[in-house]
Image (tube, rainbow over all chains, first blue to last red; front, side, top):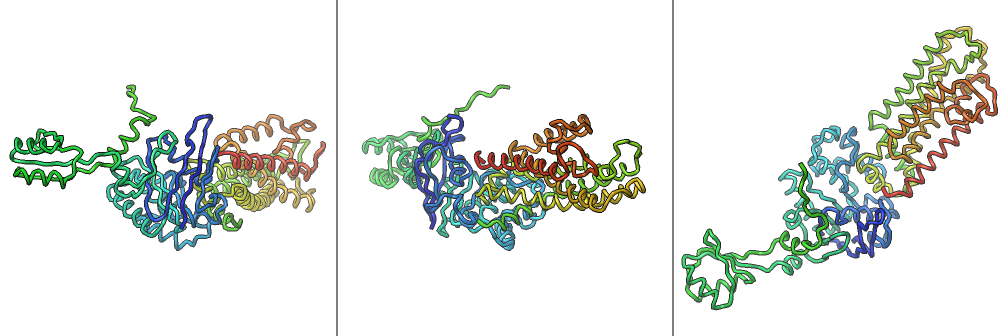
Length: 306
Length: 241
């Protein structure tokens, strides 16, 4: 199986470093989420992997080979970079047939990916009549065309309707389950959390993290426990006795920080505190991400001029 | 990567964009129409050249050939299309060679048919005024005209790859063609003889004077086209997609 290897990769545009000494590997059999704010270098890295831009320094390879040396590359690597890339005057089917012909992929496969991406019924319509969501699906169809071992998608959920978002999540899980190497960039945290096993996080072109998603969250967000009781005084004193720091909320529930649900359950039970609700509150990817990138964000919100 | 699948893919691109076959149809229609008009217009001009009169529809008609070459390339320079094309065919030199081939062949074939049709309709109008034309001259005019139109399409294709824009290419070439043809006119013996369109159009004339002949004139146009294609290929290979 093929992995993506990025080694000391640097790309400068007019003296500005878009990608700065990146080293990481994307392994097969899992979905790797590629995170970072706009301008962090995610798309640039993907273009460098595809040999579309030339690196200032370093290498990007697929199973040890540079992309331009691949014979019939669409059969090994499928990529979605820009959903607007299809010419508006072509039909979706012709757009895919053009790509298929260059890599000797049979037209039968064109119809398969159109079916798979839900575009079969509109395949003979011109692309200019397509919504953004349909163009995204067409871009994904193009990426899947050669049945590739490596799939790289840049912001695939852009413009998809809720149904499409569920569909792409299932698709990514299935591709990874089939042992393929899947790299998906996004800036939507909840969305990424729903499909990624592993994360590569960039900030200002540099690597900020390359870890399993669960580890990434656990290392940055302390778990807490949500509890509700009919006897707040008893709960407060029981928690205080065990050294737990608890916050009461206006709607009556409490949050115990830096605690595990097993411990709090025992404490409440031992003290005879009536418990109405008890739940673990796990850290979210969003919390972990902001913890990591708060110091790294390149573009902060500027006041808009009217 | 083999060349044949790349050629097939590029040919499919030309066929599936309505505007490109449309431009070739426009080449045929405009050239034969202007030649037909030239055929029935007066022949009193002392410098009257029956072969050039019959094929003169090419002068305006070539704008369609130039547009065909420019648009076939410039369709790749719209939002991300080039990246998609080069991800499928990363060998850029090979890709551009295939692109040039699928521009050249249809432009040549349509150019030949167009030239033959233009000659026939114009001769119908010219009548006895064109009786002095020999077979060899007419064959040379028709073949040369087809080759000339192909070269102009390739010249535009190379420029479009260099400038990365069809609009820029056409706004450079169309005024250039019109200025050279109508302002400099029939004046010979200047450096204008070596301009791509002026040099190549010598092959359309029954008689010619000056340093260039019909085939050497066409060779000058071929050099221009080759230079534009090489510059386009160089830019394509050097720059980030």
